[in-house]
Length: 252
Image 1: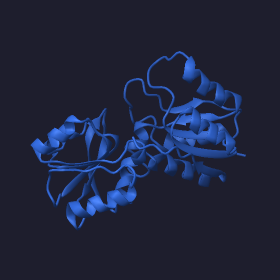
Image 2: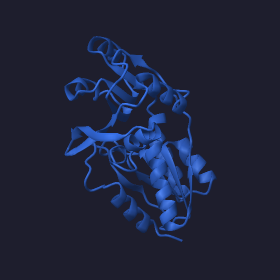
Image 3: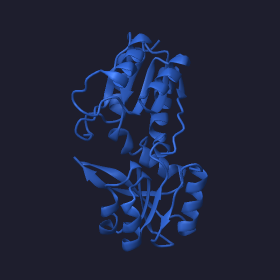
């Protein structure tokens, strides 16, 4: 049975934990320890009580979450935070968080894997943060905007939205899973008029009209399932254990 310390060391190295700085307060890496051994690993987008309960029901003792437990320092362990931590403690569930390092990873990151899922050729990156670009640039597909929209609708049937005021044949497409709000003002200066993301704000509709942009917010949750699945699958393969994805359908 593999040791927790070995799996954590592998995950830290794979997501380049020491190289990618996250937003202030966001903590990546091992967040809750268990007894020291791992039989089954799970992937989940959120470190919530429901995903924890489902993981425990399936015999999981190590869960990788994109949105981990800790976003400000420190937090009081009261209310729902206490309930989640107690649930993990009581059931020997180790919790590992991988946020921005798993968004921008060039191989197993959410952005890169979403580009792959859409059949797009990755051609670069942009939107630097603390020395690392956090968004992917891909070449526009054959068939133009209509082809991209069809692929997105097929991939995200429950969460797909389209705001189409840009080119019908975009040459460059930006991909930033989760929240894409910070990306929109940087599109035109970087020669991009099309963005695939998770969520936006209402005023971005007006920006799309005024600037001539194609914006596709396809769900924060839905666009961020890729990275945790990939990392959990790699852990399972390397250490010879099972893995599962804890799904919690969310249209936001």
